[in-house]
Length: 254
Image (tube, rainbow, N blue to C red; front, side):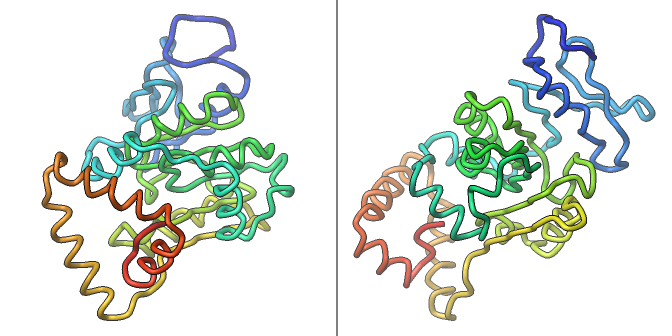
C-alpha cells in the first residue's frame, strides 16, 4: 500500500495509511492488508475479508442495533461548548492534555466527543457498532487525525495496549454483557495509560419500573409515531427546569 493517488473509496493521506496499518483481525489479532482498490481489508492467512465503505472499515454483519444508528444519523448531535464541558466532566480528562495522544472513543455514536478530542490535537479512532459512524465521519470530515471503524466493542479490530487514553460515555450499559465490553475495551489501553467509562446512574426501583414501561411502549411504536414523541422530548429538554425534573424521574438524557 502506498500514498500514491488512485481511484478508490479511501482517501490516502499518511494518516489514513497509518490508520489502516494498525487494524487487526477482530478474532485472531492478525494484521490486515488493504486491497489495491481500497475497498476491502483481508487476512491473508485465512482469506477472511471485511468491506471498507466511505473510508470506514466495517466489521459487523448484523444490524440488531439499527435503531441506535437511525437515531444518530437522523438527529444533530454536536453542541460545541456543551460537548466540551460534558466531555471533561464525564471523563476527567482536561482538553489541554489531549494533544499528541492516541485516543479511542469506544461507542462514538455521532462523533461529537471524537471531534472534541481531534480538535484538541489528539489522534483519534472512534468505534461504534452502528451506522452512526457515517454521521461521525461527516461531523469530523475536516479532521484528518480522526478516523472511524464500525465494529463490536467486545471484538474491536485494534492492537492491544496501543492507546494512551480510552474513553466511553453512556454506551456500555446498553449491552447486556456490560462487564465483557468493559474488559475487552480495557485491553486496548497501554501500560500507564488512562481509561475512563461513564455509565447511567443506578435508578430507584420505581424509576426502573417507569423506565421499563416507557421502553416497552416506545420500542414497539412505528417510526411515524415515535419521531413526533422524540421531537416533543427534545423540546422539553431545552427547558432547564423541566430537563432537571425529568432527569430525576426517568433517564431523560444521556
